[in-house]
Image (cartoon, rainbow, N blue to C red; front, side):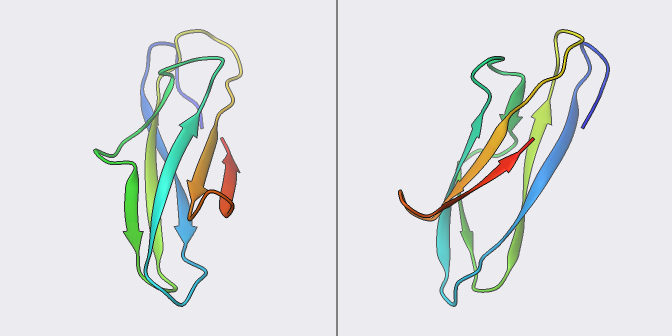
Length: 87
């Protein structure tokens, strides 16, 4: 994902529920080095996903410097079961 310094753009990650049950996922977007550069575009960090269905998780990116940024989207089903998506 890319944009100009001072610009803002959105991106996203698709998550598919791999279970046969309806689940509630909890989302975390980590970018410790550059706080507020990446943000979830959701009012709540929890989403209900039906069995076998997918959901698109939107985020925004607003860089303040001309450098390479890195972040990580973490999708939790539980404390011990989660997926990490590098951004």
